[in-house]
Image (cartoon, rainbow, N blue to C red; front, side, top):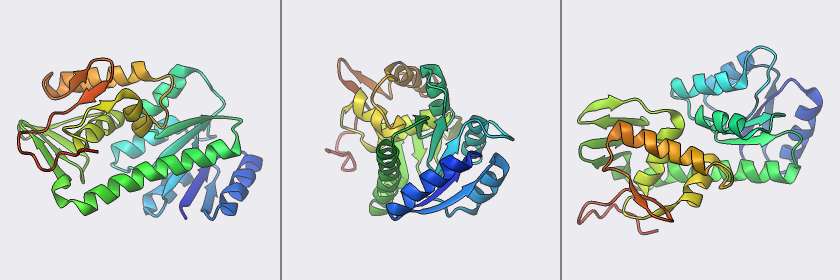
Length: 236
């Protein structure tokens, strides 16, 4: 069971979504605007938020960006009537974990929520099972997974939320080539229509961290090589 926050000023939609989630044993809290959502999310007890982009007091994209800049990594699924690809890409770049256009199919919404929660829970479990994973080092790069911070020769490197998400997934899977589809599914929740966005994120990571960190596996995906004898490298 997850605790879900629904942020939308459409009372009918909130009622329908709330009823759907409760039937599937989720706990639901709802607020009609961004200011109240900010207060609820600062409590730290929400597992996932469904956030309308067009709120009466604030743009939902601005809210999710602010949360990420504050270090709040609660999973967020953006809800909007806008279906243009560049709008979806912008929402994901700013820190959204997934993007669903209204009107949406209830089963699709449930599947997206479950997928985002699996990614979030899986990342937490990996860190708990392997304390060494709290800090991953690829000299001169060091990644502090707990703080979601990257250092180059000890100097902090500022990454956008989705840049960090791409880097983290490749780093956790170091030594294994990750397909583009798997990487997009893990970071954006879909493997369709955003391959160009993924390429842009990889390009920016290389500019910020050096060309030698992330290798391209032609026709397949990307790889952060494991150091010789690195027992932490995953073979999944």
